[in-house]
Image 1 (cartoon, rainbow, N blue to C red):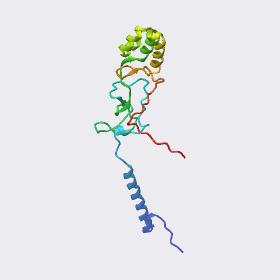
Image 2: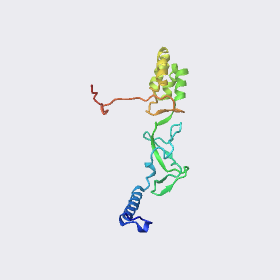
Image 3: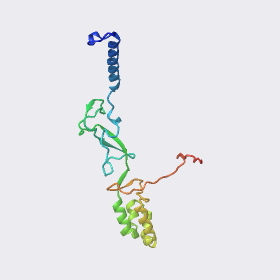
Image 4: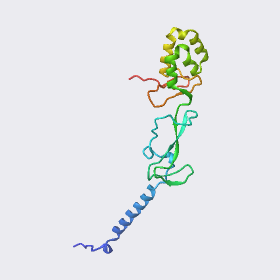
Length: 194
C-alpha cells in the first residue's frame, strides 16, 4: 500500500517546490501590476468629471481654452509639478485644453435685434463692423426692404458675423452652425465603388 501524508512536514519535496513556485509567481505578478502613477493629464475619461459648463470658457486664445479638471476622489496621479498626490475631488489636478470660439464683444442677441428692428437703417452692419454696407443700406432704406430681410436671415443663421473674424457671444450652447470649408489643403478620400 501507498504511504499517506499526515501533514505538511511529511509532504514530499515536489509539493513544497510547487507551493514555493506559486508564491514566487504571485509575488512577481503583483510587482509587475503595480505601475507607477499616471500624470494627471493622462487620466482616462471617468477618472475626472467631464467639463459640462453651459457657457463658453473664459480666456480663449487661438481657439483653445484651458479649463480646470478635478480628479475623482481617491485617484492617485502626479500633478503638473510631478508630485504624487491622492485627490479628494476638490483640488485641481490639471488644466485640460478644449476647443473654444474667439469672441471680441459682439453679442448675437444684439445683432439679431438690430437686424430685425433697425436693419432698414443699416444699424446691424454698423454694429458688426461693416460701415460701407451699413451706409449703403441706410441710403437705400435697406435695399427697399429686401436687403434687410436677407441680412436678418444671414445674421440669424450666423453666416454673417463680426468683421474681425471673431464669433458672437452666445449665452448658451444652443443651435450653432459650423461652417465647413474645403481648401487646397483638405484631404479628399477617394470614393470606392463595390
